[in-house]
Amino acid sequence: MSFKIAICDDEKSERLLLCKYVEEWAAGKGQKVRLDCFGSAESFLFSWEDEKDYKALILDIEMGSMNGMELARKVRETDGDIPILFVTGYEKYMQFGYDVTALHYLMKPVNKEKFFSVLDRLPEGQKEAEKILFQMDEGNSSLPLGDIWYVEAEGHRCTLHTQDTVLSVKESISSVEKRLAEYGQVVKCHRSYLVNLQHVSLVLKEELVMDDQGKVPLSRNLRKSVNEAFIRCYAKGGERPGMTGGGDEMKC
Image 1 (cartoon, rainbow, N blue to C red):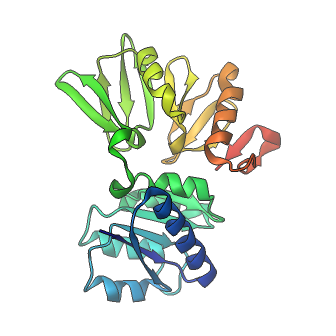
Image 2 (image 1 turned 90 degrees about the vertical axis):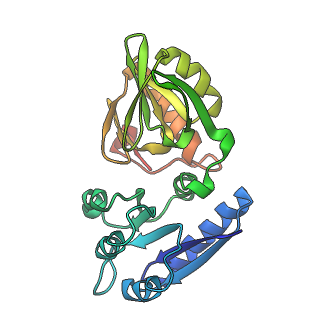
């Protein structure tokens, strides 16, 4: 059974590129997807009146008389759960994405590997095998790997930070590190922190900037290994993600 994704962007070339990326992602997952593309917020809303069964919305910000943020607010009036992904060329709008609980915010030109990692976080994109079992005070609980943003040491225990919650785990951070090492995307960035590179948008000298603009410390002696892991995570064919600051800052 296929699931529906709507793409709304007033630039035809961008719509076609995003469609191509979604189709590639779906093919790699063995997933059937139906794509509906719209050139304006108004045309999407006209369709939304009759069809509210989309599983995700991919929205540009800068569009005609109604922009993507205004459109997202309209959608949130009737649907508080549908994942919304913003793609735009303007960083100034990033702070407003939290007002509509956006799944993610990607800058144009969209990095395909980063885009795929965001789509992996859709319920339909997650695999059961990617769920990790943790022992908590209330009992054992499983959590999708993609839901974990970072892990913080707390004495002989640790806390798992997700986008919306903080979970206390009856396990040391070194134990969690060993169990998550096989997945490749969770790395040690500080003696007291592990970070899921899937949710890192910027690597600075002394800290990592997460997708929600939160900060996680980065140790000097781990900077090189984290940078290399970040490149492996998002670069294809050995190409590096965009960098500025003479190599001291890396942005994806």
